Amino acid sequence: MHKCPICDRPIKNIFQNGIVCGKCALSAVDSLGHRVVFFNVSVAGGLTASHYSGSEVISDDSIICFINARKCSGIELRFGGTAILCHALSY
Ligand SMILES: [Zn+2]
Image 1 (cartoon, rainbow, N blue to C red):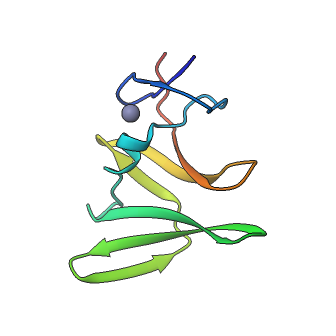
Image 2: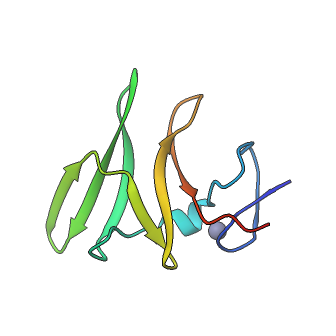
């Protein structure tokens, strides 16, 4: 069973090491501490990030984010959708 690298919870239906769970993904922030969420640009793929700064939402293609001060990045899943990959792996 794959485990979330941040909180150690088991994650179902994820087969790539380093993917964080949905709960931890919700606490992802960018380098400025703004909440960041990743989206597919289109059904054909591509990744975009929405940064929530107060009432302002800024979208760009910056994929780097941080969860619990650990460096992560947004990725596209092979079968559609997006996820967050943690770079500082510990198993
Ligand atoms: Zn987690």
